[in-house]
Amino acid sequence: MMEKETYANGQKVYELQDGKLTYFFKDGKVKSKGPFEKDQMEGEWTFYRATGQLWQVGNFKMASNTGAGSGTIRKTSWSTTKYLKREKSKNRLKGRTMDTYTLSNGVKMPVLGYGMWRNKNPKEAVQGVIDAISVGFRHIDGAAAYQNEELVGQGIKESGIAREELFLTSKLKNDAHGDDWQTDNLETWQAFEELYDEGVLKAIGVSNFSVEHLENLVNHARIKPMVNQLLVHPGVLQTETRDYCTKHGILIQAYSPLKPLSVLKEEARVQKMLEKYDKSIAQLLLRFDLQVGVVPLTKSVHRERIEENFDIFDFEIDDEDMQYLKEWSHPEFTEPDNKNERPPQVS
Ligand SMILES: NC(=O)c1ccc[n+]([C@@H]2O[C@H](COP(=O)([O-])OP(=O)(O)OC[C@H]3O[C@@H](n4cnc5c(N)ncnc54)[C@H](OP(=O)(O)O)[C@@H]3O)[C@@H](O)[C@H]2O)c1
Image (cartoon, rainbow, N blue to C red; front, side):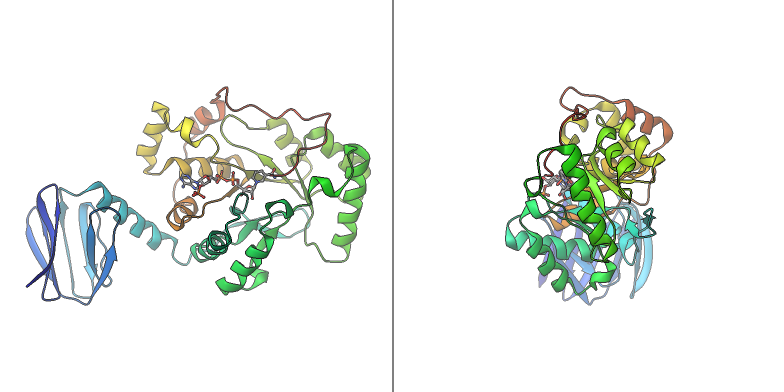
């Protein structure tokens, strides 16, 4: 009895009968024996995969515990393509260890982080942390204001990974210190320095600090900030602040790197880039920040997107495309102007 038949564009692609998988392609058919793993796909497709097999759409390669072959699958559905792309990317990510930057005090920070803002649903937040860690993230960005630090802790515990393997950020809420940005920032910073001296904090930094705010600390404090967390994406490069930070050995974490995603993906030139690099708009934006030399922080509660957002280490945006993205501007995205005010509340 036929257990399963799968068609793409009217052409039979796979059939499963008596536990044997037969798949069809242009030049004939190849038979392969089980055991089989069943993978449920999005939409109308059900896909059966022999253990250890690897399929590629287009030029077809197959390697399994039951044999090897090659050919061409000419017709396949979009969702099959997406599925196979994800499988390929999983293979690429397997066992990858994350590269790090070394902060001015010698502490290592992974070059990509998982963000916790607007991640308050307890089930999603805990699962998000578990998924991010299992995909390979070793850097989590939290804050007291996000009201989910306990959930981060729970996710880390459930992930089974040792705390020492993770770089974890927390942030002080703005209403936890005074209103005068010059004197109060300095006073708060002294408290940070003391906690750092005691070894409670492994590294200390600031967020949304412009050059003026940074100078206040650099000129008057005992220890320079090691990190400044800023908004950085095409359209908002904060070049003056970044240059100042580079000069003073302050590493930049870039928040909301995906902010221009929906606007930018409409650009014809960007669509060409996505085809050229065979990457998604999210991956292009995260890679952009990496190549600018900042540490992108990105948040998703969907496993598929978490995997996608981590899969940015196998391509490089070329100089011309980087230049285009650096020069790109849009009225919706403007450089922050907070020189003479207190740095805004961290979101
Ligand atoms: N210091 C500060 O002032 C400040 C300010 C803002 C943020 N941050 C920190 O920086 C982190 C990152 O910023 P962010 O949360 O704005 O992150 P982001 O990664 O730029 O954007 C997150 C949004 O994009 C969606 N998304 C994620 N991956 C996607 C993908 N592959 N394709 C399409 N959409 C995708 C997410 O939706 P789903 O979750 O539904 O997938 C979510 O709505 C924050 O979580 C926080 O830790 C700090």
